[in-house]
Length: 252
Ligand SMILES: CC(=O)N[C@H](C=O)[C@@H](O)[C@H](O)[C@H](O)COP(=O)(O)O
Image 1 (cartoon, protein in one colour):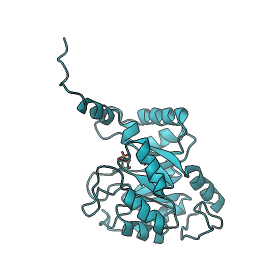
Image 2 (image 1 turned 135 degrees about the horizontal axis):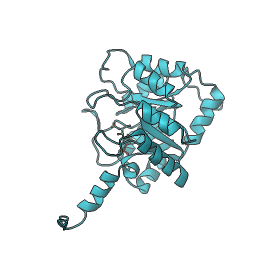
Image 3 (image 1 turned 90 degrees about the vertical axis):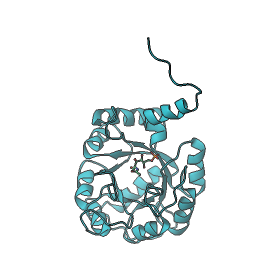
């Protein structure tokens, strides 16, 4: 890619079969913007494709949102049908170890469902099928999509970019046993990654206020991904309830 979205015409080793002009336009659409992660945890009454599509449609209609991040093949299909913005898709399988789009098979299904960008765990932990991360990246690129590497440390981000990741996100900082475990976003990791890599770096994980989102961009983030602070009503209500002095009264 010449004159890339990352500026300076820097080269990076992406082998995506997405045409370069399209890849560049896609990344530019995200630049400086807010990506809203529309996900509901298992057991939550909002966990249904129609509900997530309504949440994604609501945030994109009512706010200048640059993109959405969506979990699960059915949710991706439902959201893709109602949203014009780029969709970053993933498939969470399990809840331990590598569970975000853990194999090339998961990645292909996410791409097929309509996500332009496929996000996957790019940590150095063993993957459930024992196959290398490179295989997942190649699968995504072979389907004409961009690959977002969810990492927890600087080294993992550097490795993912060298393998051809198109974006790197701080998603998993605090979620691996060896990464920093902060109450808020890992702005230091955003700073380190964006100082080191030629590909866009997204700030993701525990961004709870507009001020933190702004600080992430000032630390070098290309885009900021916010989930729970916008799309998890139970978590938002809990924060308010916890700040109030009394237990709720009994009904009746
Ligand atoms: C660790 C993990 O599985 N993160 C997931 C990745 O897709 C989502 O559960 C998060 O909601 C997302 O990263 C946004 O983060 P936050 O909800 O903190 O703004």
